[in-house]
Length: 214
Image (tube, rainbow, N blue to C red; front, top):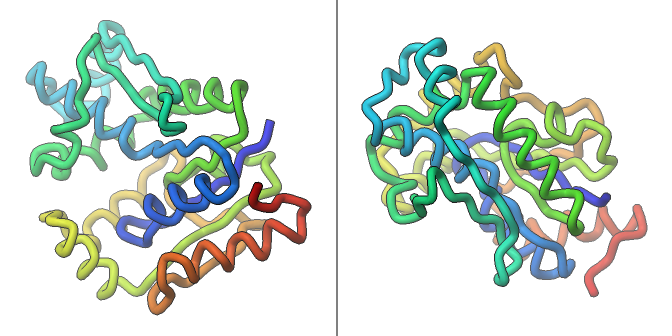
């Protein structure tokens, strides 16, 4: 089982870097954030009170979550037989995803699905707790970061309306698997690097561990 963990705060470049890195290595790409967004979307569709961990945990009992790796070598998620992809960046999801993802039962559910995916093929997996909580045993840990100002600019350029400072506070202060740097993670500041510059920097470090592009 080979998992390359890419963690970091919102708009640090995790998704674009992880996808490109997976392509270069011939690994599958897993975006854990979309899974938390998908669960959030489903809960909102059902009118669930996302401010109540007890209510959310009860709702999960009737939530069918199916995850896998598609033909494009990227992860997918289906919630109660629905494809939520088109709604994952909706403003309502943006506003509630940090609350939902802070619930221990939600994190346990998604973490179990993420670990199952790693049984099938080597992965590049990005998120906020991949190297600290989901796969703490992997030796391939990276933490991407950038200045708050640059990350806010990136988020707005993507069309996002959420505030980076608010997301940072919620993600780093939650009790269940908070956002933090794993002690053995390599930190890469993406503030002034191009996409390929970040990917090349990670590949150089991976080569030292015997992992190289196919």
